Length: 159
Length: 126
Image (cartoon, rainbow over all chains, first blue to last red; front, side, top):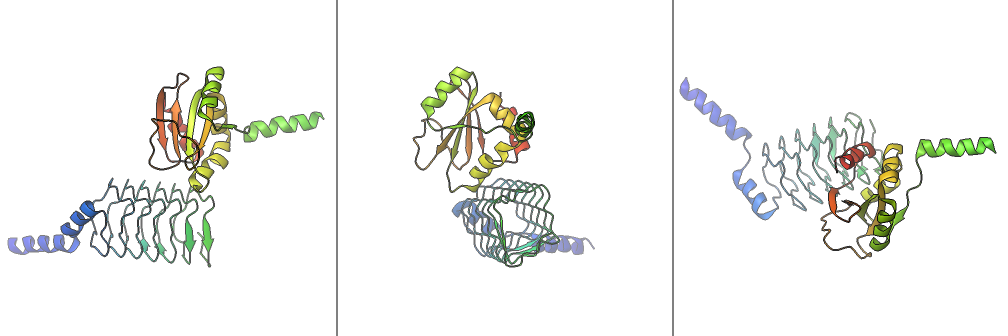
């Protein structure tokens, strides 16, 4: 019984763990495209201009990161926490943004073209000059946001 | 005429007055000394939407507008073409440096915010 429990614990850990080598690569080189960083704690890191395209960031903690102009195109950020993150000019083109916590995030000039946005929370976020193109925003939360010169085009469904 | 003056006063109270910006450090410091206010140096650029949001929207909200009018001389510098005073390093824009009337730096705010949040951050600077 003990063995089964230990094995189950290890299996669950393996199932949910990110790749440590991928995390090291990101911290050393500042880029990690097509990596597995799911469940990783990246809070407070400087990810300015980081290439995180097609990276798995599901359930990752990105609170308070500084990620100016980071490339998150094609990334999976399902259930990621991006509270108070500085994501100015970040690219989320074709990213999966399901249940993402963007509260108080700074998303000036961020590009959400073709991103799949589902039940995400943008409360208090700054979305000035951000681009929403071909998105469905109808079930996401946009309270107290800055939408100064924000671009909504090609049939974006607003909440 | 009375109605017009009343309307002007009401409009000013409701929407705040027009802020004036200095564009030379020397002139701004002279104004600070004369008016016994603090100096806010704003590093901005025309291509920066966050900068124009702060100047066009947030700074014109009544509470923040009044606080700025009463306490600050505003120096707006374009980081791409204006001479920037030495000793005021910045990474991104907008960056706001706060100096007291003796030109001593007492605060630095990085990034803009909604007017009331920015006002809170500003009031924390003594």
